[in-house]
Image 1 (cartoon, one colour):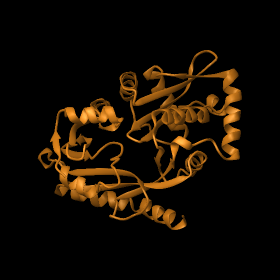
Image 2 (cartoon, rainbow, N blue to C red):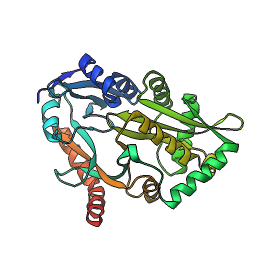
Image 3 (tube, helix red, strand yellow):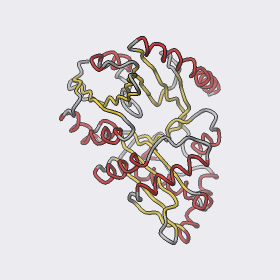
Length: 318
C-alpha cells in the first residue's frame, strides 16, 4: 500500500473525507486539533481510497504523533500494522507514534493498553429496549415537555465549556479541553454537517445540557455530553443521547460508539450498557521512534498493565 504524506491538505483526501462522511480525516478536524496544540499532517492512499490525519503534539523537544485522532478507524481488511509501518513520517523526527483502534475483540498484537467500550450495533434497526431505558426515556420526555426544551445547534462556546468543566469535576475527572476547543467545536459544527451539537435549555432559556456527535464513515461517535445537576435530575442526559442516536440513524450510520472509558468508572459502563449491548475494546499501541521514545514506550506499557489485565478479565468473562 503506497501512501502520500503531506504537511498541507491533500485535495483527493479532503474530497474523499467530505463525500464519504469521514470527519476525522478532514482539514476542519485538523484545525480543531490545533486548539489542543497539534500540528497535523495528512496521509492518503489513492490505490485504496483511504486516508487520515497525523496530528503531532510537541512538549519541549519531545514529539508525539497520532495515526488518526481520536481513532484510526480502518476497514477490517486493512492491516493496522501495515499502515503504521508505511506511513510513519520519519522525516518529522517523531519520538513516539500512538495508534488507537476501536471495536477490537481480542488482545492480540501486544497493545500498550486496552479500555472497555460499548457500541450500538445494527444502528438502522435500533429502537429503545429494556424496561429501564424505556422508563427513563418516558420520564425525561414528561419532564422536558414542561421544564426543559431541546434545541438543535451550538450554545455559546464559553457557556458550553463551563458546563463541560462542571460536569467533569462533578464526576471526579480532569477537564482536558479548554474554551478555545469548544469555540472550534462550534465553528466546525456550523461549517460541516458531519458534526452535530444538541442543547437543552430551561424555561429561562439558559443552557443546562449539551452533547456532540460526529460521523466518521459508517460509524457515529458520541464525543461529549454535559448536563448540570438540575437537568440531570430531569433526565436530560437520556433525552440528549437519544437525539444523538436518532441523528446518527438519519446520517445512515451502521454503528454508534459510546467511546471507551476507564475501567474504574463502573457507573459509566452501566449507563452505556443501558443503550448498547455490543462490548469491545479500544486498544492503544505506542511505537517508539527514538531512544527517548523507547524509554517512554516502556513507561506507558508498564502504566498500561492494569488496563491490559482488566481487558483480559473482561474477554475471559464474555
